[in-house]
Image (cartoon, rainbow, N blue to C red):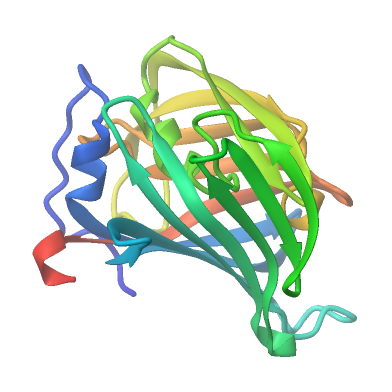
Length: 252
């Protein structure tokens, strides 16, 4: 992936994007995860070609976490989080969410199935059922916040997202501000204008991500997620965008 400097970025400070707008393009993101002076790894996020789920056309999102194997005692770790989901005018909601541990060749390590016929959420570990919970919309495995949060960036209306992961239901809440600030990122040649957001979650996410977090979004038409500061089991880490691509969905 290369720099996004040559891409046509449209600024729209008045209106955040709709779900339709976010799904009408193909975006590819690469983030660097840093702990102090150390690069812990990278996070790749990509909207893959639409697929089918129970006869319905759905979206497919992949979030890949890659460790920095140059750090002692870490080694090579590659974990894919996959999500099949849909959207309406108000929100995104998941149908299936699963985890593949690529480095250990363990696929379907964890799976969450969202049954809207019975309004239940089923949890599995390596194919074996582990728990069942009541479904609360807009239910997801947590990764959908990557799109959902962009619909609120730059406006003061708070949002709340139920998160189902590791056999538990958690809640993520956040709010943004219409105030802007200029910040620099490797993905762009020049400083970009940003919106700030902050929130909290009791979800047990990757690396033990939980608690309060901060995030920044570009003030463009799609509110590109630029940066997040999150608390994990060993301290606070910064996640910053280093590469970005945008294509028309017809290119998928």
